[in-house]
Structures are given as C-alpha cells and as structure tokens.
Amino acid sequence: MTDEYTGADLFVDALERYGVSRVFGNPGTMELPVMEAIGDSDLEYVLGLHEDVAVGMAAGYASTRRYHADRAERAGRADGDDPDERSDRAATVNPVGVVNLHVAPGLAHGLGNLYGAAVAGAPLVVTAGNHSTDFRHEEPILSGDLAAMADEFAKWSDEVRDVSALPAMLRRAFRVALTPPTGPVFLALPLDVMMTPTDDDPERLGEIPDAGRGDPTQIELAADLLADPDEDVALVVGDGVARSGVDAVEAAVEFAEAAGARVHGEILACEIDFPTDHDQWVSYIPPDEDLAATLLGADNLVFAGCSTNTTLTRHERDLVADDTTCVHVSDDAWQVGKNQPADAAVVGDPGRVLTELAGLVRKRLTAAGREERLDRVEMVKQMAESKMAAMGDDVADDPRASKAELVDAMERIAGDAYVVDEGVTAKYAMLTRWDFAPEQYVSNKGGGLGYGLPAAVGAAIAEGETDDPRDVVGFVGDGSYLYYPQTLYSAARYDVDLTVVIPDNRNYRILKDNTLDLFGGEEDDYEFVGMDFEPPVDIPANAESHGARGRLVEDPDEIESALAAALEREGPDVLDVLVHD
Image 1 (tube, helix red, strand yellow):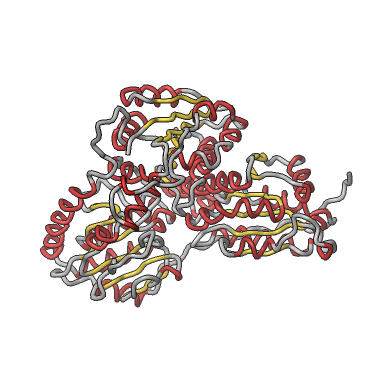
Image 2 (spheres, one colour):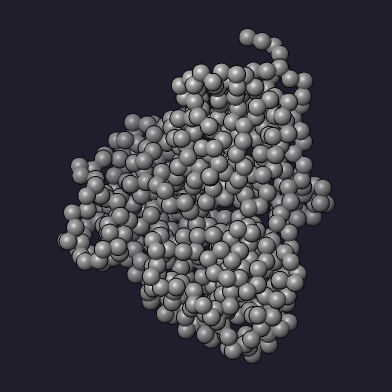
C-alpha cells in the first residue's frame, strides 16, 4: 500500500470531475490500481460477467443518457435559464459511458459490442489495463497491441505511455467521444503508468461543439434543387437526427411540411427520427431491395442523418436511380455522398440545417405546389401501408402468438415505456405497429447479436438515475438473449428495474429468411443446419439462475396480464413469450 497520488487516482478523479458516476467492467490484474482507486472514490463499479456484456451495458447507458442530456438542455430553455445556467444543467448529464476491460483477451471479448456502439454512435470511453511498458519485450501472457485491436471500431485509439500525458489524453478521449458524430474511443492504461506517482490534476473538459450550421452556399443550393413543384420530394431520416435531439426531430417535421415531402426512415433505423403518426410519414424502409427501391423512387431525395441505408447483402438493382437529385445532410462528413452522389452536400447539425432549409424552401414553393406534392404523398402512403401492414402479422394455425399480436399486447400495457430492442425478425412488427415518441426507442443498429440485453440493463440503470424514471422494456429475441444470459446477473446484483420480453420462436429465424433470399426455393428444401434450438433452453429457469424472475407465456391471452405484473414489480423480470413465424 502507498499513500502517494498515482496515475490511477488521477484517472478516477478525472472521471468524477467529468460527471461520471459509474464504471462498467470486468477486472483483472493489470486493472488492480484502477480498481483500488475506484474503491476509494464515489464511483460505482458495475460488474459484468463478460467483457462484451460490460461494453453493451455501457453503450445502452450512454445512448439513454444522451437523451437525458438533451432533455436537461430543453428543460433549461423552457425554464428561461440564462445560457450559463443551461450549460451547467446539461453538463450535469454527461452521457459518456466508461468501460474498463482486461488486457488483450478482455478487449477482444468486448469488440463485438464495441462495434455495435460505434455503429450506434454511443459515446464511450473504453479503457483496458496493459502490461508495464518496460516488461513487454518478454512477451508475457495476455499481451497484445491493444490500441491496434480497438482502432477499427473507435474514433480514436491510443495508449497512455507516460503518466504526464494522462490528463491531456483523458480530456481528449471525452471530447472526441462527445463531439459529433459521437462514438467510442479507446485508451490502454499500462500497469506501471497507473502506479506511477504524479503531481498533476485532471484538466477541465471545456465546451463540446455541435456540428454547426453547415455551408450556407450548399444549403441555398439544396433549397433551389427542391423548389420545382412538379417534382416530388422524399425525406429519408436516419438516426443522426435523433442523436441531435428532439429539436432536430422537430426540425425534420418543419422541413417536411415546408417541402410537402413524404418521409421514410432509413434502412435499419434504430431510433425515433420522425413522429410516425404524422400525416406525411409513410414508412420505414425495409432491407428488401425491391421494396426499398420502390420507396426510394422520387425525383428528389433528402438524406438527413443517414448511415445504414443499404441492404444486408448485395443488391442487384440500384436502390436510388441515377437521375435522382440527392441532397445529403449529416454531422458526419464520411456519410455525405457515400453511396449516392450528393447534388447538394451539407455537413452540419441535422437540426440546425433542416431548420434553415425549411425556411428557404418555404419561400421558394407556393402553397399550391406544396398541396400537389401532398396529394402524391397520400398515394405513396396507401401503397406502402398495404405492403408494410403484413410485417409480423403472419396468419397461422398455431396456438402461439404472432409477433404482431405480441407487439400489440405490449403497446396496450407498456405504451409509455422506454423500449430497447433486439427483436431482430420481430423488429418491423414493432416499428410498424407502435407509434413511439422521440427518445422512447433504441435498437441494435450494428446487427450483431448480443447487444440488446446488456444495452437494456445499461438503459435501465440510466433511467434509474432520473427523478422520474420510465419503465424500461427490453425486447430481445431468444437467439439474442442466449448470447449473454449472464447479463441478468448484473441486473439482479444491482437491483435494476427492467422487464425483458422475449419473442421466442426457438430458432434463428433471420438466418432462415436470409437462406431463402440468397438461394430461393421453399423452406422444405433446406435442412437449416444449426438454426433451431432443439432441445430448447429453459429460459425462465436460466433467468432465475442469474437472480431474475422468469416466466414462460404460452397462451397469447396471458401476455397482457403477465407484462402488467412484471412492470409492477421492482427488479428484473424475464417473460419468455412463445411466438410463431
């Protein structure tokens, strides 16, 4: 033991100074200095039984805390706070999730959900202990180039090689994670650096800029391109809109109304980027190339905050016709003009840009021209509704619920709950039937299974920090749940108030669907090797073994009562609801 102030102490003090209240992780020997410093601080350590669980919990926590920070900022404006007070209020909700992993194998375990966090834009500071800098030449076990391992899925990845660099590198890590486009960063923390005495203090974080108002010349060009009343306009909103806050969602509505545009959610949209009960909302774009190409058929397309607007596998036809005029708006320069040429390219905060663009378009478009466009919106809307309505509403001679029946029952009981979704093949049943409010829904945007259950626990922890916490419902497919069921240990250990609903079809349905898409034919033509859970896992017993309550729901008529009872109870519940495909 030493009473000297070390790099580990400085690390923990910096976290507290930046408004961090908890660290997610799974500890090891190289992390012991940090663990000791956390034990002497006010930080809470949230133990995950697998490193990928820790990363997923931190990502769900960060995505949810981003909403809380936005809510705090808007509350300050509504209360008439002066700008300094609003800044202080928002600063008390730092959305960054902090993770501490264990050297090379631990970081490798966490890469799956680090990828998911990167695609979701979750602001994370991921750290891992490492061997002492003067010992690595002996190639001890657990060694690896940690910064290189994390680099592909991090905005910035580096190692603190001297304690004197620690204050600046920690400040930089938080700033990079929080600066749009937000996302994870990684820092390796060598054992000797963390144990070295230091006289330094944490640096102040400073202000975090948004992405700005965008190039005014490009915005004027966009308005000119969208002014012809004889041409229709479709707005495709991506999750960059939701990440910019409710103001940006409202700006998307303002723009759509000014332009007479129909509105779609991008392929694999995973947040609420536009109110789906608005008259000009048409549909989410599914990852089906023919339907996607049909919905993207417009004279003018405005892509706002999009990043995943393409199919899972190679598409044989163009999703966007060559003669379509494309306007791109994003806080991420990489996404602007990435998959289609941008006839107007605006890098800036989606909310700021759409607000300005709405005003310019309104001046250029007559009321009569706007009404003509709205008439065409209604025609497309009727066509899309007929095609989308059947998603998840499979009619079958089967005693189990359909995915649509499950979603309908959930909405009746938990309509105001905050939903964290990894239902996979049940996702579109949920999105097409449940009109979520902004900041009410978040899903696994990266697509890799094993993100949703940890993210739901992290989201519930974040909600529990608020003055008026919402019910949190994890909607997690059985295949997804079985990746990391030990996540429930963390939920039980920390008494997290969470209800997990599992649409359980006892197979990897997404792989069966993709088999048919790739090879054609009928289901009877395939063995579907490795795609069925036979014998099935007893999910309620599994949940109970980790400290949660578990219940099997076989009768569709029992879904509502089971869910209502689970929501009434404190702590984690798992409802295993049998559904048919």
